[in-house]
Image 1 (cartoon, rainbow, N blue to C red):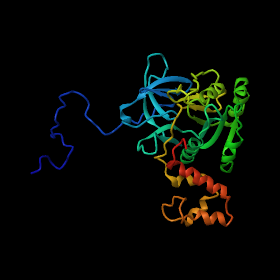
Image 2: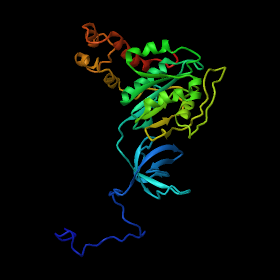
Image 3: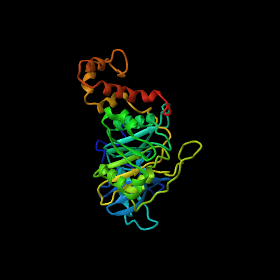
Image 4: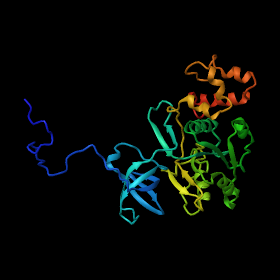
Length: 335
């Protein structure tokens, strides 16, 4: 028996009253078409500092975002009080599509990846030539993460007054990675900062490196009006102390680019990396993979790259460098 007539919109249809007096639940979410564009500068315990036009605005995630993460470098839509006045709080209602995502895991066995920064287009890998000693395996891992994320890597070698950079640079020559060498004296007089700044013009650059290599000191030289705390290297362990506890985006003087200073790392897990994507950073080798077996690791007897290189299509050192980078996932960073 039909409860109502043929017309579902007829007036005699009874509607159950809402006893609580609140609005009925709906799957329709507001579009917030009038939301302002924001750029996430830093994240601290649920509060996100954003740049909205020329104002610094404190924000929080809107409930409708659910568990969607928001990280430094994200471009977001913001509603609410956008004055930037003290004790005001706006809401992030939408995270725009990301152009790139730099990720890492705590170690190679950790299934949970962490987004380090979004929308960067360059990764500056900062390492000291001495005090503490350079860790090539960590550099290799950062390079793999950069290639996987589609970021252009930049090697920044500090403390050249303590050791020569020649040996380290020789091992990365075949990769064609851009580099800048600095010393403590050059950082003090501003010469090193100017050379590094030239590589950052018009880019969003994330800085990574383990503690004590002078990463934050370099960032302070690049952005003099925003000084962050710096630490020292422990004479017993040879390791630096973490002084940067959260990522922070800073504009270069003149508004020509952005520097994102990230906390020092002691490991850079690659559990999230798909080895098949790393080959894209080697355009001279990539055509040679057409004859590879399915799911080839590019480091096995049937890999077609060996014949490709033997036939003279690419430099053997390039293949060696590719396989060295791919093998970093199986090796500890201190090896």
